[in-house]
Length: 97
Image (cartoon, rainbow, N blue to C red):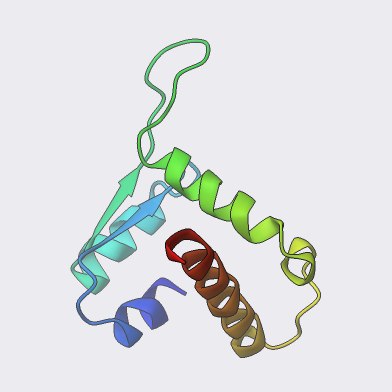
């Protein structure tokens, strides 16, 4: 997925990931793709807002509000990508209209 994304969007300079994307994912992105993978690290014990993670969680929450995207029912990834684009377009239009 990372390779296909980097090929499809050549202007991409880095990826953001959760702490689950450590080790081989970081090496793959660095050595093979020549990009950077930024991971959210645990800042302190207890509750703390992680800088980039909140953006990802918020975006997924917005997309989850769309009924068709709330469950993984799409068979083709192209269909899912189109539905995500439509949802983001609707959110953008609602924000600026």
